[in-house]
Each structure stands twice: as C-alpha cells, then as structure tokens.
Image: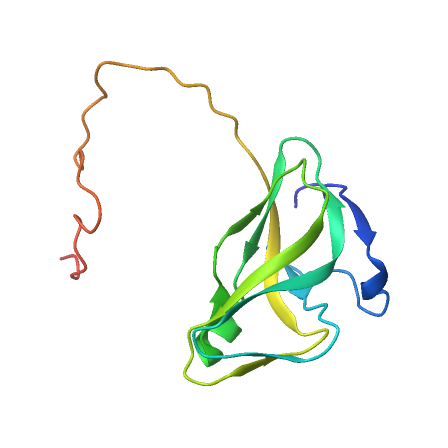
Length: 154
C-alpha cells in the first residue's frame, strides 16, 4: 500500500453536521462526496445544478483531485457529473462543488448528506514540449475516434 498523502481540509460552517469525505471500503480509490444543500432539491430530467460539498482543500503541489460520478447513481437514476472528471487544482482554495446532471426520465431528489460523487486524489505529471517535424510510426498511426471498431476480436 502506498503512503497516504496529507491534505489540509477546511470544513465550512454550513457543513458542521456532515461527515468528511471518506473511503467506503478498504481498497476504494475514491472518497465519497456528500451534498451540502440547505434543503432537499429536485433535479428535473435534463436539469443540472452545482451542488456544494461544504469543504475546501489545499492539495500539495504536484497533486490534483478528480471529481467523478458514482456508478450506482448513473446506472439506477441517470445521474452523473457533467464535467467528469472535474479537476481540482493544487492552488484552488474554494468550496468543492459537484455539477450534477440528470440524464434520467424522472426528477431526482438531492438530499442533504446524500453521497453524490467521488473524489480521487492523484499525482500530476508536468509536461515540457519537445517539438518535432515528425513522430515515430505505430501500428495504429493517426487512427482514432472509433478506428479500432467495436466488434469482437478473434
């Protein structure tokens, strides 16, 4: 197991009654984020809303946090994170928010304390560009956007 990364977290006043983000199982990659809405709200079919979580973080330099959908909400209700994965940069200090969208056919109730998304903290690689006149050849080449097909490989 890798060594945990220490991340400073500030619980905001409107989240005093909610637990901090947590891993729900021993080997979970993401911590569940909870809705910190002041009252239940309805997300209409096709609707979207920025849902507060009630906390802010200070990631160490060289890390990011990704906000991702919860598979159960997506499969059962059509609820997902609109900008998935949402990126939280190491220099952001505001409240973490989750942009939910309802792709389902019926309205969805977002309740205070409901687990609405998950957050994964990961290292970030910084890039320096090495501009070239040509790139090495590969079997795939420039094929993209479905160029490998969807059929069964035989």
